Image (cartoon, rainbow, N blue to C red; front, side):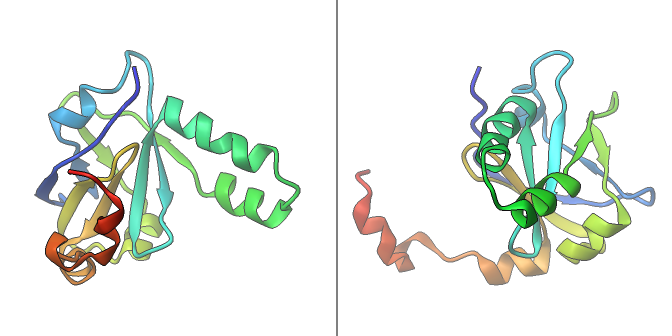
Length: 138
């Protein structure tokens, strides 16, 4: 099964740095598989299911760019949601994404992203302002 994430969910970080992963996203996780969390190039976290992460990893495994390999693989953290559907974010991840309490979980196709709410609000552009959408057929 290929995971496909869409929709936007508003949430809060709890006192133990845990975030609730929406059921819609957890249901796409195969039994015994994990999510992989990476720092995104923007001030957010990228979250992949294990199978998609492995496919994306191939680009780095086959690269001669040792710096890119090191940067990509060293920061990957695998997490399994607990019985309530929560995952714990590390202090380093929270700092990178500037997440204090309010956050947004955003589907982005083959991954989903975790953003501090204020950063997401300033980064998102309404669809009517995206000139790049001219290349897509609706």
